[in-house]
Length: 396
Image 1: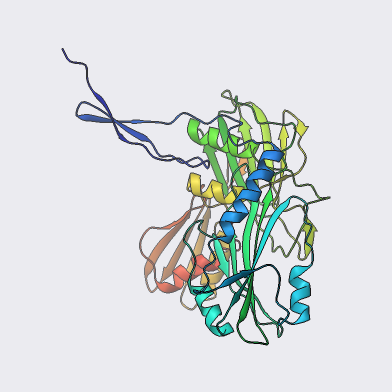
Image 2 (image 1 turned 60 degrees about the vertical axis):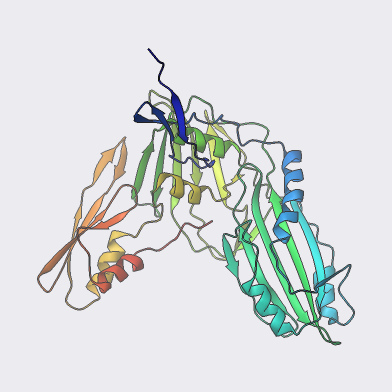
C-alpha cells in the first residue's frame, strides 16, 4: 500500500496584522486547509539600536521612488540662483530626535512647470505610498510638490515620509530638493503581553455611549498576530517625540486581552484625541499588563491594521446621525429599534432603522462588527445618509 503523497498546493505570505489566510494541502484528491502557527509574542520586538539602523537604511529606499526628468544633475548644496529664503529654510540643520533623515538636491535644465508635471505624474511603485499630497505655491517656492506618506513598518518605524520641493532658478532651470524621513521605534524595556492571551475583545465607542462595536477575536493566529504587533510598539516619549496636529475627535477603542478561562490579563486603550491644535504623543496608546501600566506607546496605525485584518469598522456610521439625515429629507419616515443588552457584562446596543418612502420600506442594520447593511438596494438619498452618518474615519 502506497503512502498518500502530501503536496503543498499554495503557500501564502502572511502579514503581521493577523491575516486569516490558510495553507492549502492536498492529501490524495481531497484538499485540506491548515491554519498557520501563531507568531511568537516577541516576533516584532527589536532593539532600539536595531530599529535606528533599519530607519537609516529605509530612508535611502524611500527617496529613490522620486523620478526626475532625464539629465537631472545631483549637486551638494542649493545653488546660489535660488532665493535666499529658499536656501535658508531647506538647508538649516534639522535635529529631530528619533528620526533618520536623508536629503538630495538636483538641478534640472528645464522650466519649473515642466519639472513639476513630470514629478507629479512619475514615481516608482515600490515602496507604495499610503497617501500622497500636492503642495501650493507660497510666493517663494512650490512647497512640497510631491509629499508621500508611507505605512509604518511593524516593530521598526512608526512614521515614514518623502517630500519634494522645487523652485525656478534665476539663471534658468529648476532646483529640486527631496527629503525622506523615518521615525524609528524606541523599544520599551518591560511590560509585555504574555503568550497566555487566548482571546481579545475589541470595543469601540463614541464619547460616553455604550460600545457600538464589540468583536471577540479567538482564532489563534489572529490573537498571536495582535499580541506580537502590540509588543512591537515603541515608546511615545513626550520629551523627544511630539506631534503638533489638529484632532477632530473620534472613537475610543479598547482591547481586552484574556486567558483561555476568560481571566483579564491586560487591556489597552486608544483614546479619543478630541481637541483642536493639541500637542502631545503621536497616536498614543495606553497598555496595562497584570495591573502594571506601561509607559505611553505610539499606536503606529494599530487601529487601521485591526480593521483590515479583522474586517471590522471601528468608526461606523451612528444610527441617530443616519436617522436625522433621512428626516431632513422630504418624504422619509424613520423608526428606530434599539436592542439594548449585556454581552460579557458590557452594555451594548445593536440597532436597526426602518426607513419608509413612497410606500417602500428599507431595514438598516448596524452590526456588532461596525458594518452597516441594507436589506435591499436603496435610493441615492439613503446611501448618502449612510455616508453622512459617519463622523470619523480610521486612517493610517
